[in-house]
Every structure is written in structure tokens, then in C-alpha cells.
Image (tube, rainbow, N blue to C red; front, side, top):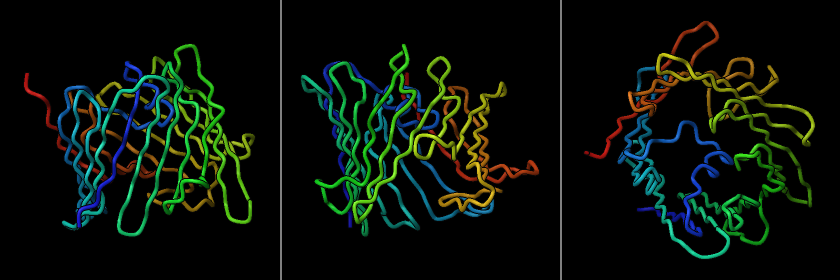
Length: 256
């Protein structure tokens, strides 16, 4: 059964990809000449996990993403970029066999993100979380925003995300519970030998980290880049320095 999701972007002229990448950091975005990326995940460093993904790009923008698990289609997202006068609205719909979510991003006329909302279970009235109170530096890059999560029985929880950038590149990101106490730190070190080191520290050795390996609340990843600066391999790095292959990518570029 084919699953389809659509991503609508309505924008007043200029592409605001930098603002999107800054507000919602996607590690090492691709260069504009990337056409396709085929990605495979591994477990224990050498065994395929069964997960494969394909990404199609045009002019550096993602147009479609498909995820398979053991040859079974698990996700199919199609992205459509459309222009419209006035403010910019982004609708991101994700569906699979068991889940549904809808994310709506609101931008002002100049293209600055001002609000984001996430909805589950096709309920577009009561959001699961809202991002707002966006703050920008002089380069119109997001440096701080507040996220409020909503739970049953009118319960809610607020946290803040702060980002430190250098020449438009994300160097460090902090998560603060109740916008006060730092509970997660992520930093990126750009190495000289075409590699990038990324560390996520959950600031608590007892924390249970879901969706990835961790040692005492810390995740360490080493990215290998090709000559164009796009990453082709990701390794999980243990505290003793041992590298474990996590993801491999094959990148196809536009012919000159």
C-alpha cells in the first residue's frame, strides 16, 4: 500500500531555506547540485538493519523521501513548493500505517518563522505542541524559541531551545526545561580532514535515550564528508574511541 504525505510551502518570492535549516536544524544540509541520496542503516557496524531511504532533490530542496523496512514501504513524503503573496505557511503531513501527524509552520512576510504547531490523530484543533517566541540575531538566524507541549487533563510543559551559530553554521544547541535548567547539550566540531564530530549530551547519566545508542547519557557521531562537503557515512563513536558504522549514503549529483 502506497503512503503519501505532502509538504506545502507558500512563500513571497525569496527561498528561506536558511531560516528553516536554522530554526529546525537538519545536520549538514546538501549542496544545490545533489539530485538523489540513497541511504542504508546498519546495526553493530556491519549488518544491514533493514532500513533504507531515498531522497530526491531539486536545486538543493528536498522533493520526495521514501523509507523502506525490509522492502516494505513505510513512508512516502512528497514536498511541493508553491508561491503566494503575504505570509508564508508550511504544512508537513506525515502518515504511516499506525500514525498520523501534521506540522504547520507560520512565517511573516520577510520569511521569519513566528510559530509552529504539531497535531496528531487528524486533530487539527488541539495541538500537541506549539513553538513560538522566536528570537533572531542580526543575520535573521533563529537563536532561541519556546516549545510548549500539551497533555491530557489540561497539563502542559514548557522548554526552550537555544542555538549558537558561527557564520551561519550551527555550533551548539541547548535544551532548557521550563526555559531555565539545561537538560541537553549538542555541539558540533568541524574537523579539518573533511570530517565532522557531533556530540549530544543529555546532562544526566541516568537518562534513557530512545532512538539511538548512548553511553551515560551521551551520543557521539562522526560524519565523513565527500569533496563537495556532503556527508556519506555516519559512525557512532564509543567512549573508548571505537567507531561503529551507523549509516552509509550514495549521492548522485547533477551533470555539468
